[in-house]
Length: 134
Image (cartoon, rainbow, N blue to C red):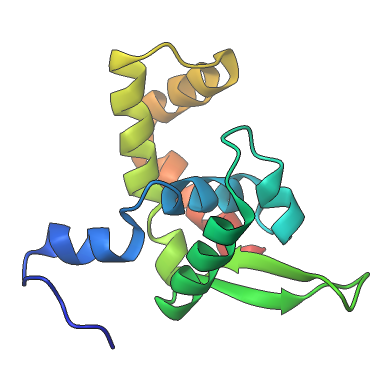
């Protein structure tokens, strides 16, 4: 296990997922439930292949994601969130709510956040339950 910069919970959390790309990978896995390497490369943010490979390995080592055999290809693997990764759903919801307040966001995200605001706790529980079934 890597040494920690400090005992601060925020610092320790950022060591796991606080870089420029990890939360976007988590976002994609929360949306699609399972992704191939190529799926991540198709995201609009345009992650470089070397960065993607590094982040996926780091996130797997940190227990946020896991690799699965691809049912249709021995050359591909599927990535999905572990329980530890799924537990980031409330964090992702809060980031979206914060962003809605300060940025222009897409209509589909606005619609999702409208549903969140009706029953945030219920929305989060349902989302986490669905991800755990995947």
